[in-house]
Image 1 (cartoon, rainbow over the protein chains, first blue to last red):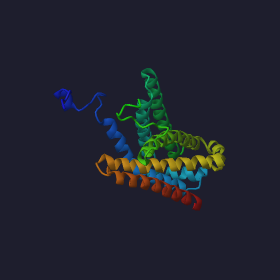
Image 2 (image 1 turned 90 degrees about the horizontal axis):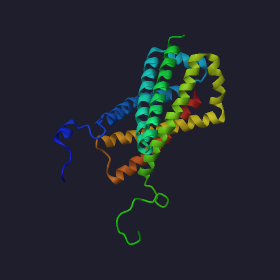
Image 3 (image 1 turned 45 degrees about the vertical axis):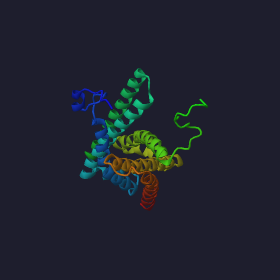
Image 4 (image 1 turned 180 degrees about the vertical axis):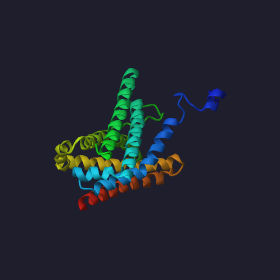
Length: 126
Length: 127
């Protein structure tokens, strides 16, 4: 079969989206990071009574603060990447797709920030 | 089109999706559910950071029937997405493409998700 791509395009390996495999790669890396973190947070929270003092006391432990902050950042990055793919697949109108993508990205950024700030605020006992 | 012999795409209303196809779309659906679920979890976290009173205003809702339904649904979605995600990671490095294996890992992912959900629920019940 004839290859219609130019030698330059082939060596750059960026494809039509000019973005190469970076989106795919970041989605996989974030999911790998989340494997231990999700199991840890799921079972830790399940084992904890849900009252305010217990919850904040748990978060205030240094390593919990670190792991939870990492998990929140990675989770919302992973969510942003995943939602982007779904929106790009199912929203065909270009203008509507751009608007929904902006909204989704902004929501992920905002929620991730709120999450991290909340953990830090609890941790530093403000 | 009765005389045409060319292959047509599956008609969604009469075509029974294979388990893998069903899990594939479920992966996307659970992904969206989890994103919205995380919105609620961050809300709870922000309330806990705000004040004990703000958190205590939410706390009864977590114990209510709809709170428990949300938590159970979230946890099951999480583990199903998690287990099927691990399946995807194996595919990404080139393993598990044989049809029989794909079917076995699909059932394994669902079974593991159920086991993890029950395990989490039991831990929460004991604590």
